[in-house]
Every structure is written in C-alpha cells, then in structure tokens.
Amino acid sequence: MAKVQGAIEVNEFTCKGCSLCVEACPTDVIRLAKEVNAKGYNFAYMFDPEACNGCSNCAMVCPDSCITVYRVKLAETA
Amino acid sequence: MAIDIKEIIKPENIVYKKSSLLTDNVMHYCPGCTHGVVNRLVAEVIEEMGIQEETIGVTPVGCAVLLYNYIDIDWQEAAHGRAPALGTAIKRLRPDRYVFTYQGDGDLAAIGTAETIHACNRGEKIVMIFINNGIYGMTGGQMAPTTLEGMKTATSPFGRDASHDGLPIKITEIVATLPGTSYVTRQAAHTANSVRKLKKALKKAFLNQKEGKGTSFIEVVSTCSSGWKLNPVDSNKWMEDNMFPYFPLGDIKDE
Ligand SMILES: Cc1ncc(C[n+]2csc(CCOP(=O)(O)OP(=O)(O)O)c2C)c(N)n1
Ligand code: SF4
Ligand code: SF4
Image 1: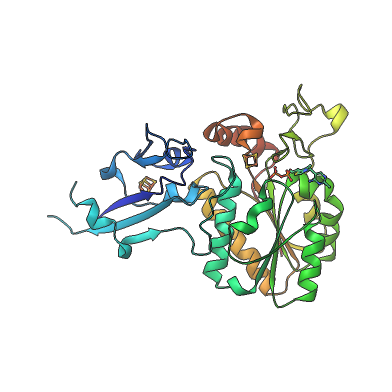
Image 2: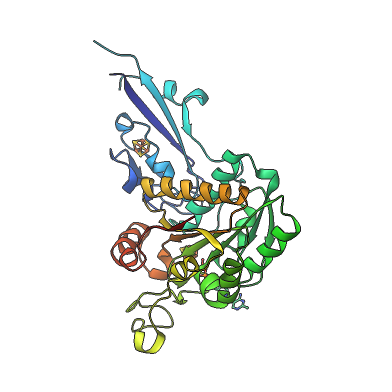
C-alpha cells in the first residue's frame, strides 16, 4: 500500500490560538507556540511533522482559515 | 522523515486551502468562534457551485454583522431580525439570484421571530442559516430565547428559570411544521466530520433554491466561548454535553 505524508502551513499572523486544530488532529501533530504573534496569540505550528497524514481535519475546524494542507503519496518501499 | 518537508509543501500537493472567495480581512470573531467556520463553509459552497456573481447574502445584527467584509459576493445588511424580510424582497425582485440570510438566535428567534416564521410560512425561495449559540454574543452574553434551562448568562445570573422565562424555543422544529419549508436541518461545526456534513447540508440548500423549492433552513448548534466564559475546546465539550441533548442534530424535514 502506498503511504502518504502530509504537511500543514499555518498562517501565524492570523491564527488566534484557539486550539481547535490541536484537538482535531488525530495524530497529535499540532501544538501552540510558546511565542506569540503581533495580536498576542500563541499560534499553532507543526510540532511533529512526521506524524501528519494530510487528512485536513485541522483545516476543517479552523474558524480563521489559517491552515493550508499538503499531501504526497510516497513511493512504495519493499 | 522519509521525505523533506520542502518536497511536500508545493502548490501541486495542496489538498486544502482557504477559499478564494474569502477576503484578506482578518475575521473579528473571538478565537474559536463557530461563526468563522460557518462563514468559511458558505464561501466554499458558493465557490464550488460557481455562483459568486449570482449570490446575494443578507447579514444580521449580532456578531456576524460584519460578514460582508469576509466573503466577496453582494450583500445587504438588515435591521435587527429583519433579514428574512429583506431576503424575501431581494429574491422576489431578483428571482435569478441565489439569496441567503445568516442570523444568530437573538436575531432570528427573538426580535425577528415574526419575520422568520412568516418567511418560512410563505415558502420564500431562500436559504436561511441560523447560528444557535444559546446567547446574545455581541451585546455581552444576555439570555436568548434559546438559552438552556439553568444556564447562567448576564441577565440570568442564577441560571434560566423555566417557571419565569419558559423553556428554550426550538424554532427549527417550529419552522419544520410550516408547509413553506422544504428542507430543515440541524447541524454542528465542532469536529471535522460535523463540518463536512454541514457543508453538504449548505450545498443541498443552495441546490434546492436552484430547483425553486421552498425555504431551506439550516440551524448550526454553535459555541460562544466569550459569552459562555469557557475556552473554545471546553465550549465544544459543553455544547456536546448540554446543547445536543436539547437541540438534537439531524434532518427534520426534507421534501
Ligand atoms: C433594534 C435593536 N435592538 C437591540 C439591539 C442590540 N443588539 C445587538 S446584537 C443583539 C443580539 C445578538 O445576538 P444573536 O442574534 O444571538 O447573535 P450573536 O451575537 O450571538 O451571534 C442585540 C440585542 C440592536 N442592535 N437593535
Ligand atoms: S492534516 Fe491531519 S494529520 Fe496533518 S496536522 Fe492536520 S489534522 Fe493532523
Ligand atoms: S461573542 Fe461569542 S458569538 Fe460573538 S464572536 Fe465572540 S465567541 Fe463568537
């Protein structure tokens, strides 16, 4: 079976640190940063990139459309 | 990792991105507010149906008052509760347009109850989107007709008392009894699954309008973390435990 690898990009300027994506991610990819953005929010970031499968659950629940999701099929390895 | 992240983050690998109909304006809603999710889904549905030039939205008075800043379509702003009346006028004057209203529970089920019921009873060929967060969000969290029994708000500091205020109104069930409505459903937007279902419901509602069917009415059971004084994650949990038993999700009418 071909494996997939995902990745997300979070717009850290518009993220309000609501944490809904952290809850929605089935593989615990996302955490909130210790630093804050210009509005004072701890923005979301990929803490564990390898665990991302590109399912887009995080983007589905984001109220501020901050998340872009990418996904690639990895070549099958014997 | 097996593959460099730079190899993944390329335009050809995008599986989800912000709708092109959403403007660059940063939404004014509080962090985690359901309004943002529903605003986004409305934009996605209009974009996917390719009806940007033919759609006119009507915004309410309430936290969604500035919705016209976020989705790049034509809009009108209604007086408090009057969105269904304005939507009626727009659709009757421009039957070639897709018309939808977007309202909170204070707007749709308190000050605008008459407009809601009569637009649905007349079977106006519009889509009505109803954000039920059980509170007046914009004005500081006063009791709404949809506030749950025992729920504390700025104007019910000891909790809603049914002997004094009645039980929360199920306006969605009420409009479902009216012959003018064709599709009445109650959805949520707190999980990826519920968001996908809500998007399908929204699309169906716009397609109903294309087919000339009667009013499509979509309630979204929502959170107001500021009004409820909970964080967004706990608000979702509270909604599941308390709102869903009283406002159960699912289609109520589909004709
Ligand atoms: C005629 C009139 N009466 C009262 C108000 C004050 N007011 C503004 S928003 C609002 C209630 C909004 O609550 P809701 O419709 O539930 O929307 P939310 O903010 O929760 O999304 C009220 C009473 C007003 N603007 N106009
Ligand atoms: S795309 Fe899926 S796996 Fe990747 S971060 Fe988002 S929710 Fe997690
Ligand atoms: S007050 Fe409530 S409804 Fe209004 S933006 Fe904030 S969380 Fe959303």
